[in-house]
Length: 344
Image 1 (cartoon, rainbow, N blue to C red):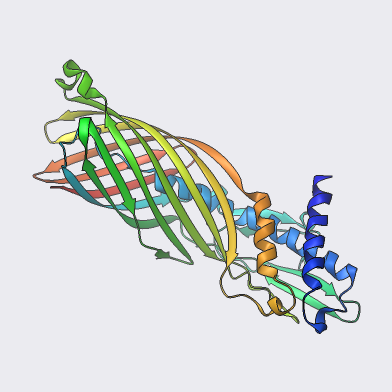
Image 2 (image 1 turned 180 degrees about the vertical axis):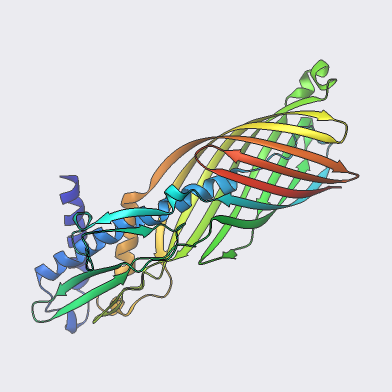
C-alpha cells in the first residue's frame, strides 16, 4: 500500500506539472506518465545503493580527532592544527549487485544481473536501458552506470582550532574548504565544546592522567559525478548527486602522559541525519517536465538517521610549542588522522 501511495504521489505531481507545460507535451499519455514514474523509482533505488556507503564514510572522516588532548587549557589559550585524514575503503563497500527484478523501468543491457560500483568503487561499463512512449513515438533512455572514485585510500585535509574558556571548558572548531578529490567534492565544518573532568580529581591528575567529555555538531557535504542520461527529449540532468550529513557527536577521552609523549583513547557515539539531492546543470528535459525537482522530491523517501559507536586511539608528541599527533578511529570502518598542532 505504501509503495502504491508513493507511485500515485509521483503520478499526481507529474500530471499537475503537465497541465502547465508547453504544447509539445500536451499529447502525453497516462502510459508515459507511468513510465516516468517508474523511471523516478529506479533512479531513487539506484541513488540509495550508490551513495549510501560514501555518506557512511563521511561520518567517520568528520568524527576523528576532535580532541587532541583531554588536558585542561588555560583561559584564552589557543591552538591551531592542520589535519590530514586517510580513510581506507573496504572492498565490501566498493560495489553492489543489481538485477533486472530491481527495476520497474530499466533493464540491464545484454544481461539479467551485474555488479556495479558504489561512489567508493571503480569504473564500470554496465549500461541500463529503457523506453519512453508518448503514444506516438518511442525514445530509448540509455544510462551508463555511475563510476566511483576508484581509490583504495581517500585522503583529505582540514584545519582545526581550539580556544580555552572558563572552568576547563574549550571551544573547538574544524573547517575544510570544498576539497576536490578524484571524481568528487568534499567539505566538512563543525563546532564543539570540550570540558575537562580530571581537574576535579587532583590525585589522578598528579599521576598525569586526564579525561574529558566533548559534544559537537558537524556538517559534511559530499558530491559525486552521477548519471549522464540522454533521450530524444534531452539530458535528464542527473549529473551530480550530493549527500548532506548532519552529525551530533558525544565522546569521552582519557589519556596518560609520559614526559613529552601522551597516549589517548576515546569512545565516540554519534547520530547522523542523511539527506540527498541531485544537482548540476539542469537537462533539456526541463522544457518538458521539472525532472530534477521531481527526483529531489522523491529522494526524501530515502532520508535516514543512523547511530555509530566508534573507538579511537592516538599518540601525541611535543616538540616545544609544536605537537605531532596520529590517531586511528575504528568501528565499521577504519580512518586514520595525522596532525601538526601549534599552541599559542
